[in-house]
Length: 362
Figure 1: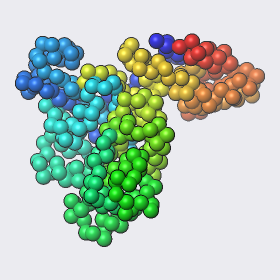
Figure 2 (figure 1 turned 135 degrees about the horizontal axis):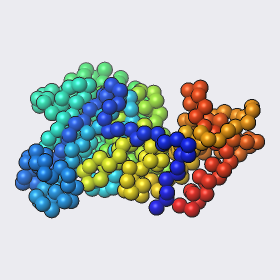
Figure 3 (figure 1 turned 90 degrees about the horizontal axis):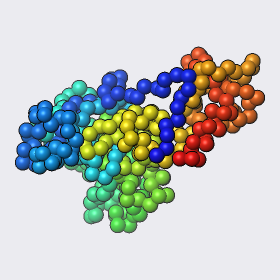
Figure 4 (figure 1 turned 180 degrees about the vertical axis):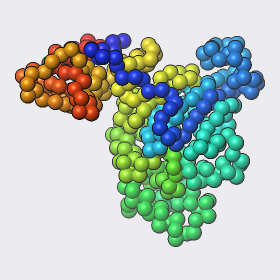
């Protein structure tokens, strides 16, 4: 297992808490999903709270797919949930819109408790506020691209001219111009996934839930779809919760990443926080193959005890180390690292070369 790159001269940035983001768009508190004959009794039994999922199963025969989960998602954030297969991440995302009914806990969307929502109110939430993109596209084979994309609006009761206009807007947005009258079996897998994405976007939802949507795609198509999600997010600013088991995908897409194990939250934070300060050996193993220079920023290796000479270059503390390498190696001496106009330390060739050596030895 690779060792964590130390930040000399200062404590590492604090790992972001599971709760407490400013103005949460979605807030989850003490969420449980338990399967089994005694499911309803598990969340209230405090003697079980300190046990792991496998230990609870051994003692009670119940499976805790989601165990006492709490976190906040900020408006406009891309929040990634990841973990190994079977950790409960897909169950979690379905609980957020009550496609799977949670056993206990609270899910608040814009302050409204979805757990207390009536069936008609919940249908309205799914139609207008929250849309989901699945791994298996679920397209209607007898409908064309435009028919699939406009289907949700049709169910909502939108008039035909309005729903066709909106369908065309999102078809253009995801790059499917010219394919409006094609049927799903005439499209490639990547194009079918674009139809699924367009269908989710058509209703202009506040929150988009993605359940491993690209895992069945070929690598090249997958990278293209990842880039498409990033582009759409920049253009629309929609809050996105993205489920994946692929760390590179999580690091590429996520503003913050939540790592699960046996239904529990292990750590949540930005990519550099997970790589630079893993909460335990499980997370450290998860991120051990990540090139630290590609993820960590200069603040992680800035040395407050190192001094730069007169006229030394300055670099921002949030610059990724990889992007700073040419400037640091070309400088005559240490480079100043600045955060908000304040020098927080310096970085020299030794710090860069030491980090690269640890990467090569990992």
